[in-house]
Image (cartoon, rainbow, N blue to C red; front, side, top):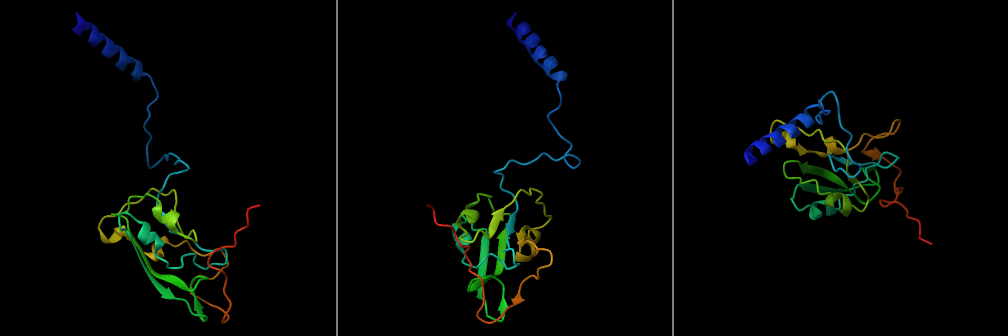
Length: 168
């Protein structure tokens, strides 16, 4: 008797769900909005004037628990400038097969150069495509601004870390 009652209860549950709206979406046609705190594809940011925010300090690589980031720094010169600081990231690579999207690189960056954005469409067909280079990560310069490297007047550059207001 218990067996029959359980079958009827199971059929009632199935019947109740039969007339509900489906929870699935058709992915390529419909995209579900991501949450505010979602950590997706990395981006290297620029200042408003077009210079790169990354100063090549490698703190992001040191903070990465998966050892997915590799940074090679080089010196800026007064004639050719990539970032406002003394150095810039000559080579910046992230191995997306190793990355666990923890956000430690974002937290460790003193200039807020690396940011995990909301793009989740990350697919590649071989291992070489999984290594994102600086050219793939850096945001294009603002409209009307020249990219990097740029020629500047000798001795003039902006601070690498933005000015911060003193708390009252």
